[in-house]
Image 1: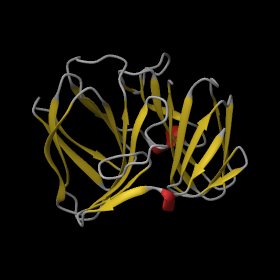
Image 2 (image 1 turned 120 degrees about the vertical axis):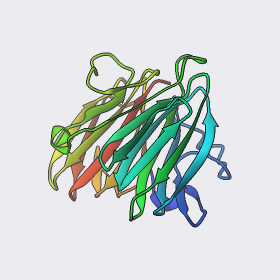
Image 3 (image 1 turned 45 degrees about the vertical axis):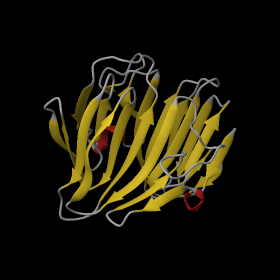
Image 4 (image 1 turned 30 degrees about the vertical axis):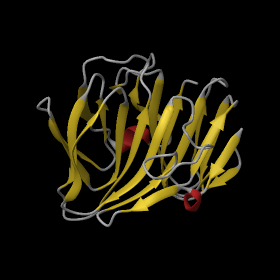
Length: 233
């Protein structure tokens, strides 16, 4: 099963400083058919104006992954962590028993991110945060694990859930392959560029919900940047 979810069908909100599109029900957007996909609960496509952002606010018991598409995001939290994550890189916050953090765009231009929430396997663990650069060349022509709680992904940022977040960059005409367990749930979004997923055309920022499939073949129709989540039921 492969279901394309066009960008213009997504929920969303325009707060002026924040323009958000929601692949799944979130905040004021509620669609009973889009409450999550396996353990994946949130996928937000956010554009954050320069010198604005999210003031300190709490989270608990959620794995929160931020993939920066353009610009940079600056994180601070009540554990004393702080850092700046730039385009193409990833940060992971395991909210655990509770954490309060802020996220600001301190850059001169708009920052664009995907924010992805995945339900953890256990609740109440100590919170943590981390960020890591991922050179674009390492994921050229192939999917590379950026954050993972699965075996064999030692170079990825750790997640406390049986899931992985992967990235790939493809030049027009290139194809990347990914093997799936058909019991699992995958969700793919091109950050840039149009692709075909098992022959189905998907444009930039569309979502693709995938289940009961054992293999993905993603062909770039244009130069493309991809983010894929592979999660448990």
